[in-house]
Structure formats: structure tokens, C-alpha cells
Length: 267
Image 1 (tube, one colour):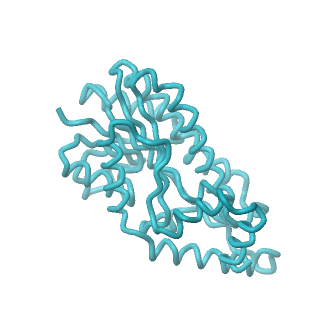
Image 2 (cartoon, one colour):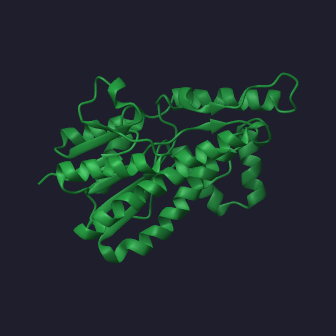
């Protein structure tokens, strides 16, 4: 019997690549989108789900269980980017980012855990970010939301392990997707104290995404995690230097690591 997989944010980017890879491997894949009727080229079914809406999440999960009878794997992939000087990011946008990147995945997990507990099995993979391991300039909110999800995962996997449920994080680096076009950019304000340094950093961030890794690398990584009997707590996927930056943060004194980041971003 093929495993039933739910992927939030499965209509584009990393989520779409993962879904297509798993579909071709014989999994029963359900992706989600806020507007699935607008997606015409999906090789797997898309159900309506907005991670900011609890009723939407519960409805989508109930629909999948009613159709397939179970949910074996959940990939919490839906997320949005956000950039800007913290001082100039509207609080409403900060809250929206956390609703999508942090509270949304929590509600998805709450919705699927009863079914997984009944099955006495299940795997939840939370897609976080290498940016969640460090506070990055002009990406403070994004780093914070993804870092919070990393810690929630560490705690929750211990709470549900006795039920036969596994939970893990997979943190991608920069991938060539449409995340840059979809994220909230605090506008460059003429005459702002942050105009020049933020402008320089924003240009660099967009270049990193444009030259990023192939999303298929994430699909292979997720497939390998699913095939693993006892997944690790953390996985990192991306360019060597991006993954190595996490190691450096662990071993270098804080101020030296901070200086390294500031030099990298020319601050």
C-alpha cells in the first residue's frame, strides 16, 4: 500500500518539486494551495488549504482522511519570506509571517496528530531554513519564525515518540524558486537611515536565490528521510558554505561570527 503524503504549499517551488518526485515514486500525494483552481499543471491533486485558517486546515485534513483513510507523511512546506529593517517592517506583516511560517505548521500538526496516533505511525517533516539557525540582518523576522519552528519540532518529537510518530526538521539554504517574488519586502525609503545598507543586502539576497540550488535536491532529501526508519532531529540541504555557516556559529565566539556576517553583507 502506497504511503499517503500531505504537502502544504504544493503548487510551486520546493513543495511542487517534492510532490512530483514522490508521485513518480508511487506515493499517494496531496498538495495544498489557497487557490487550487488556478493551478492547471499539477500531476497530483491539490486541496484547498490556507495555513492561516484553522477551519481550512481541519477541512483539508478531514477530506484527505475521508478519501484515503490515513495520512502517513506530512510535509509542512508552506511559508513566506520577509525582508527589511525591523524598525521599518509593519507589525501586521510580522504577525502575518509568523501566522504562515510558525502558527500555521503548528495547526497542521495538531490536525494530523490524532489520526497518526490512531494509526500508531506517522512522519511529520517541517521545512525550516538555514536562516533559522542565525539572526541574519534584514531577515530578522524570517530567521525568528523559522528558528521558532525548529525548536517546536525538537520539543514535539519527544512528546509524540511513544505513539510511533516521528517529527524532524529539514532546513534548506537558497534554492532557485519564486520565494523572492512572493515575499514581503519592506520598501526602500529614500533618506532612511537604512536605505543604502538594506538596498545592498536586498540585492545580494535576491542574487543568492536566483543562483540557488535545484529544488529537486530537496525532493531527494525528503524522499530519503521518508525512507529512514528513525529520522534525525535536523537535516540541512544546500550549498556547502551555507551548511558550514551553522558549524561556524557553533564553534566561533559570538562577536567573531557576527563580524563575519557583517563582512559578508558589507555592513
